[in-house]
Image (cartoon, rainbow, N blue to C red):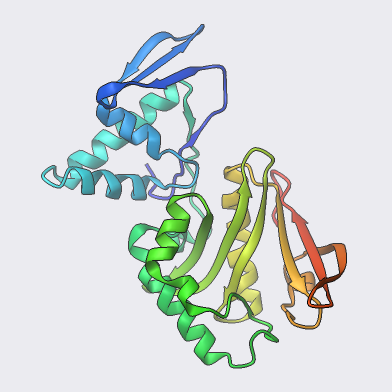
Amino acid sequence: MNNCVIPQKIANDIFVRHENGGKTTIHSNKLGLKFLNETATMVFDLCTGYNTIEYICDEMQSRFPDVSSDIIRSDVEEIIYYLRDLGLISIDDFERPLGCDIRIARNDDFRAIKNFVSNCLDDDKSYPASSNLFVSRDKEWYNEYLLRERQFSFGEINLINVKEGKIHDMITLVGVAFYNGTANIGTLIHGGSLSDFAVFFQNVGTLLREISIHKLKITLVDGIHEFQISDALGFELEAVLEREYKDKSVLVYRKFLPAGESI
């Protein structure tokens, strides 16, 4: 199974209840009554729609450090396919255009994100009037502990482009509403050319469609934020909130991510 596969829970008429002792009860008219043991429940709970197989294996390895990585991998894959066969999750075996360089930040990425953002802010003294940064100026906001807390509490999702072990680009989504398929961009940094970032952004769109996000929004303050998203990334102006921020207008841009189309 490809490391980049992202298992996603399926919203259906199956009844799921977590029991004492870490087990799970499952019932549906089609399946009847089924049970997941403690290990299968752990894997099922990690199928959030944005954890890759690689991440799930790493997380299970941390919980069972005495078990070999080969056994962990084999057991996780067996459970994933079993959950799929039960109709609890969907999996999509495919190769991403840029391999695993593009991913949702893992537990061991947050320190690198902190350093990446800090270095970008130090290198770009012109921010916020910058064409390659849309980011909070407060470096403490990107403290690795706060990053981890916000992502693990579903306050945000950090997507990064890693090449040769270093972060080159980053997008943070906030206000992710899975129930209606929308998300807001809170941080956006490209470390190279805008055309390279557009490729990264295209593949991010593919990943987002897999977790049922169909619309992205970004809010800019007129005359302060000058990020060139309109032409390069295909965003369109959706609304103007006049004198919304310190007597300046706030511009709301949006981009739809239709299923089956490139962004």
